[in-house]
Image (tube, one colour):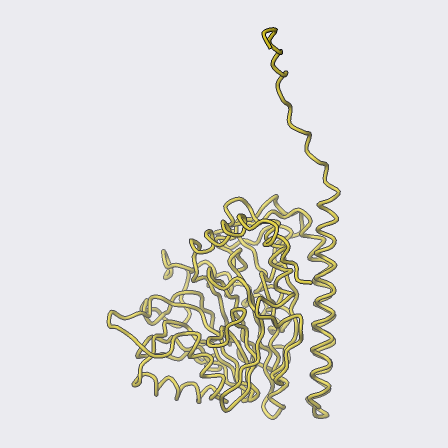
Length: 433
């Protein structure tokens, strides 16, 4: 059974929640394209935290109808647009909204989500996507986004893309990306007339600069000893820092210590508007592109577990449902119970214990999957074996999430009930009565 009892039991609360979300900032995604030259295993990585005010419920869906089959994160029940995905050729794509790329002229053609669906259906390489942008420069697009893409041939590029133009930033080019990666949040260097990797001083008063700078700081630290998948999944997706970029004590990247009573997330990478996150783990040249892995966190990644999804035309049940993948729905409940009154922060009571449980499960899934991926890369793969692995991984994550939900409910039942209200002394009965 899906954990949607709150929605059914308290419809007015959910109405207020929907109104609050509509008023929230919808353009808060943070992304990075990482070359295999700077990763621990030589495979490229691609990351996105998805923030939106209109797509709270997400699922993973199989995308068909084109040259290539794909799997992608979509708004639940909607297949016409995708927000990050990978196809059977090993081509991966994601985006972050960048309103500064808009033009004054009326625009038409595919938007951000529909262009990504088109790309997954037709592109096998980074260069294929570049040609698609060339074609749609002429035919028309309504895109305003930074698109990150990697492929099965070592390609790792970010495209700042307006309705009629684009500019590419190659993570493999040491001139463009001296550290081997390109980070973006919700601005474009093209529109802001900045170099490829702007500094803090250059970004003064630019929206989303704090998330861009924080992501760069994290990757800079990871890159000192090569960047690995688990660091990006854990440290980038779940980072919680203050306005100055300092991680709060007790959080993933923070110093040891007790968590503060609550944490505001208006400037953090992991926010209360984060509805899902993905880290794509690519393949080396010559490896089977179907080994490309989409590590998927449905719901707020602070309250969810990363699950491996391969582009084999199958999605495990806990990730796929037209009302929202079940893992994500549990994550929504776990997060909503901790939201501060302004819905821009979370109360931290019990979070340390929850994270300890979740991350141990996630560590196990990553270890088992990476071991299998290395074995399949050497010995060849059978799609049936891949299907079994990703199905069992999703089931394992689902059980862990269900247990957290039960633990939270039990903890709530142990709370001391408030004292009943006191009423005044009843009025004396009149003698006339």
